[in-house]
Length: 150
Ligand SMILES: [Zn+2]
Image (cartoon, rainbow, N blue to C red; front, side, top):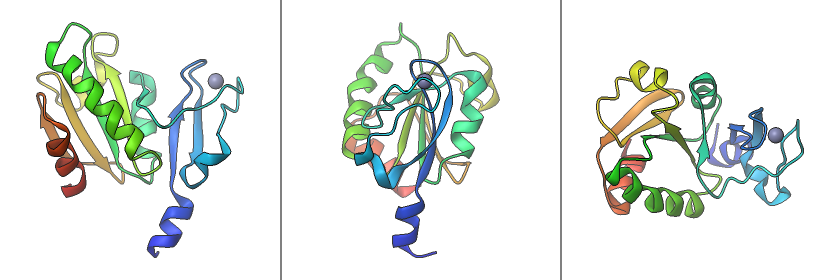
């Protein structure tokens, strides 16, 4: 498959923030403003999406683009510092990667499954497999190097 075909077929499985339905979205056509198949509300991919324990494995395995999972908690200072960095990367790289946030207090199963020992932990998945991991806060340049070097 060449680069052009890869772009055309880029897709991700995205949890609807309103109703929780998992939607398969073609990332080559974000200008068409994808909406949830169930509740018809917009699926906004220029920002991180949120996934639960039940959804995470399907989101990771369903994407043809890199998936960056941020295991975080609301009370965690470094996680709060990481937030704007992730927002920025999601906006700049919309359609090229998916940033998925997992609240580790509300979703304790997946952090354990992926061996998360401290937060924030960011894991980069490519083709459904872990390709890189970053523990603790990192500035944007470091995060991008981790994603692109994976
Ligand atoms: Zn929905």
